[in-house]
Image (cartoon, rainbow, N blue to C red; front, side):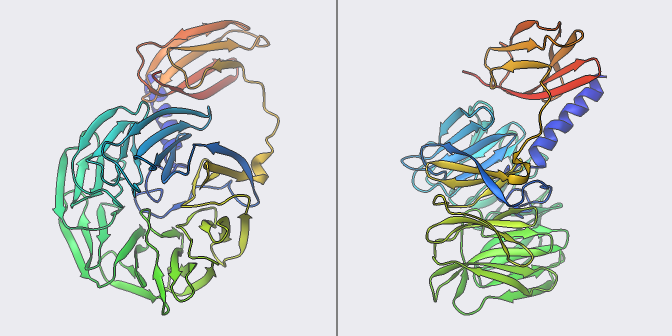
Length: 461
């Protein structure tokens, strides 16, 4: 029974983290920038709420209903904000961090990896408390974001490409060279700069092949069909054996826009990227058919103020223009499906938990689908609990209308039952949780013909 419960709990947590979250740069190790599993978020959208963070985040990720974001006004600070409880969990100021961070955090299990411009190291923090678990002085991290593989390795460029043990920060292998943030597909790493585009074995760093090029690489994306490089003036498709499939050359005066999070998104057979029309000084969004490299459509903004895209459910979302709005286009034909002009929206949006997160002053605006915004009448929970997040105690109350007693278990993320109690209808109880570590837990409530599971968070006050 314990083995089955452990497996079920791990599956719940694994699904929460991977299926709908945005836990790293461009959402996944393949750097597609596209949430393929999303099936609910689709225009028309409506505003859910504005989270006041006191400023515009320079970068952000979302996992398990927690928003992790960087602020880089006077210093570089990473914050953790519980979305369901609307409560800041912790913050951490990166020693020496200054200027624009140019860095996107990443998550693996109970760690979050942070850094930034002029910071002295890469830091692995406990993502539930913000406490330092390990740090590594590996060099310049501006525009070099970490890439966890989800299995215990962490890839990051600084003055070299490092493959680190994600749990302790020790070096598994490294290779010299100044390249952009890498891309991982299967057991190979892909990366490039203005001189070469390379593939190496992700386990040991050995070079599989290298192709010379004379154009700066702004992003590499991979899927089962091949590898795509977005360069200054071209987009190219390669087979996994290094042979070129096709190249799309930009018209005269068109150049890729460089962002720390890349400038492209891959959705099935459509590759979308942002570019700058230097002749008219305006931003562009261009869609390419990945089967043959032919342009499907383009959108030209009215300003050079244009940012990097993100997408889900056959829609690409992008901010920019004058004024800077948020727009959503059909990825196949460029039809405008959504636009909100209520505020100035900036930087890359992201999708998590069937919601669209868009940076804007003084924080983040969250949108949700109008089609799912009207919730059906919910059954009254068989019990109530508070607070969430909780500290040393959590309070429980069982619905007095229940026919009989029920069993309540407090289960850790690894499936271990930490506490168990039998409660009678109408009973109130306060659980003492001192000595339990910070993190996510499940309350599993079982009564006659009823079982409910609720996710809760313990933090250290």
